[in-house]
Length: 126
View 1 (cartoon, rainbow, N blue to C red):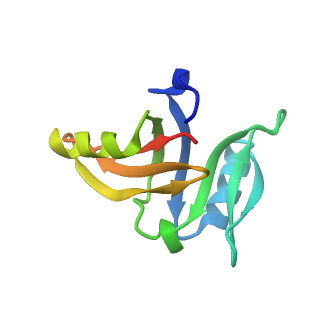
View 2: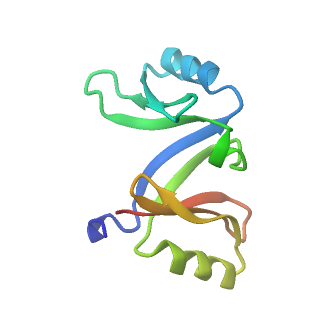
């Protein structure tokens, strides 16, 4: 499992949309991010990197394949110790599970809606 010091922090942010290439170009011009292709097999999603360092800052994803059901909004990924346990706790405390726990980048994630209606992803590092 990942570094326990990361539990509770925002580990990533991305957005899933129908026109990922168009939004990639929008944020490249508005924010100055530099896009990097992320091979998804038959298409590419994008890591948007900081211009000076090349460090990934955010992702822009196509609403295809496993991302088809994700909400069309910026989605924060909150690092948790155990994504399955956190998903169960979410439901027990009045939240809703929008995407069941599954693999992502060597770890696991799910998408929840909290009792106030806000959506976030929970991410368990590898």
